[in-house]
Length: 242
Image 1 (cartoon, helix red, strand yellow):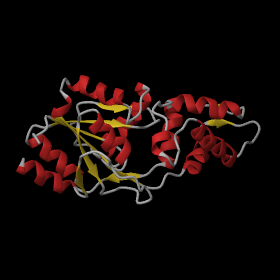
Image 2 (cartoon, helix red, strand yellow):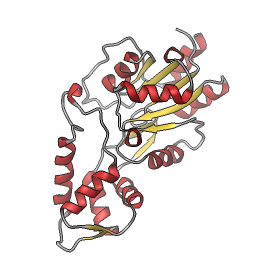
Image 3 (cartoon, one colour):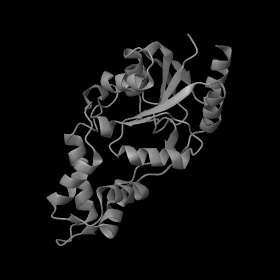
Image 4 (cartoon, helix red, strand yellow):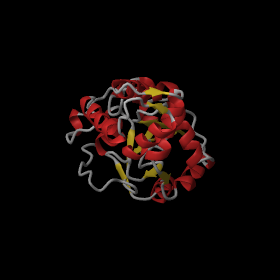
């Protein structure tokens, strides 16, 4: 296997370890800080509908193969969710999204990711990001810069901005076009066996299954060839050998 010219990273549970998502807490923050709620709809009512909408959109399915490969931007999702209840949002879509995310989502850099990214910079391997995420690309970039301010990612692709979600080939092909590289010159690192590992390998990229922050309830395992690691220092050693 050749030394890659670029390594592309997943975001959640790869670049950052995310704590359990608390959608109800996020919805409570939006209602308190950015909503005119004349019918006094409760956060529990709003969050229940949000969960049902996510199921309707194919976002939460036990069977990975049945999950949707089309992404719906969070701003569109917000429009339906709050207008359904006659709630008028009093701040911009970007501000509402940020209020929700700040309350609902918590993360920290994965162990040794900063060290690994510096190593890649030192040996002139380019880096970028592809993330399956409904939140806006601008918020994704802001979070990456907050948690890993030293990053030198050439580009960040949020599925919300480009319609397609991993493992669909279109989102990997977009990254290759942006990088101006062939698939066999690129490695992809992610925690999800289906979306990240098998998705990247199917498109001709070499995949790395990062398990250092993996959700233990996820029993899926990759079906394609891959490198398996639990710590970024392991990949430093592999690249030094290569």
